[in-house]
Length: 333
Image (tube, rainbow, N blue to C red; front, side, top):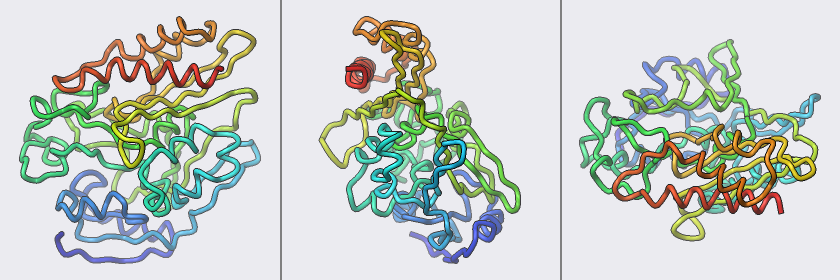
């Protein structure tokens, strides 16, 4: 870990002002925010992240969940994962989010990790996290991708490019993708709202750019839309061991069944995409159809039709399909 300056921000505007001094908000940023530190500190210890200044934002008053007049739920960026998972509004109206949060990490980490930080988790690709491997386009643009042709069992099969196949690790973000969350961002005195589906970037030929954040941007809130009466949701995570493990495949489903037909479906995958992976293909295959095994299998096939597996992770295609089918069966039974 290199030497760095530590400062504390007393307001969101002050934090934004300090971070605006960095040349980038992406890989190699000179200024980073720290809240729980469950990702940033690890990467600083590995010298993958080498900021010259770290801005502590733990004093910001962004740690509340609030029901809005329109029925939506506003979640502060500093709300801890453990608190959010057990929030009565979330447990009752957005169980997919509660389940996703509780399937991630450990109780100790959930007590520290924040909503904003979880959205910005970095990949667990071993080549990204180990400086002994010089070829990592996400860490050093233009250097190559060691995972392509290397050990890639845990890597992505959706949204990949010839420059990067790293998997996005968050469970929470997958659930929020299915819930169509909106992310509120402050920069100085300016605020904007970004749908979560537009927040994450595909790697393309710039894997070092992971999201739409710019220097000075600070995530302040996440808003979940009002719950749909009669809708059900579920999060299913498949992994090598039962706890403290990242997904090989996961599925977040939000389904509204009217009679025997599926009126509305929102589907997202984790563990298989370079970002939390929304599947409009699966949604289209479900909506208007009977809630039965044949429909679920057709949706799973549609969702993985464009998968591009590597040598070691071809099993993820069928695993993700089975994960979705099981999640849909669970939520409609």
